[in-house]
Image (cartoon, rainbow, N blue to C red):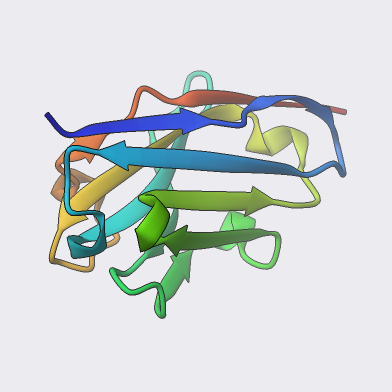
Length: 123
């Protein structure tokens, strides 16, 4: 049973930082590309960041580039999203997702999804 569990969301003011965590279980974590996605109220889910299996390659969507950092520790079965200089437009439910072997930015390629964690940024 593959499971991804996000944590670390919360309510913060603009300019603050949060670090989201995604813990994987029931999978060989190092064989999975990991991604972070988000869905704001009334909007479609969108890509935030992707990290490849060893962690040496990363991709960021333009709205978060320079502010967010994705990282992973395969020994801990965990991927993080460090979110700095948060803006109200970052308010969304943040999801982690996993796909085995392939490196992709297409959300429909991701097979496993967490339940999400709410991030709310007030102005």
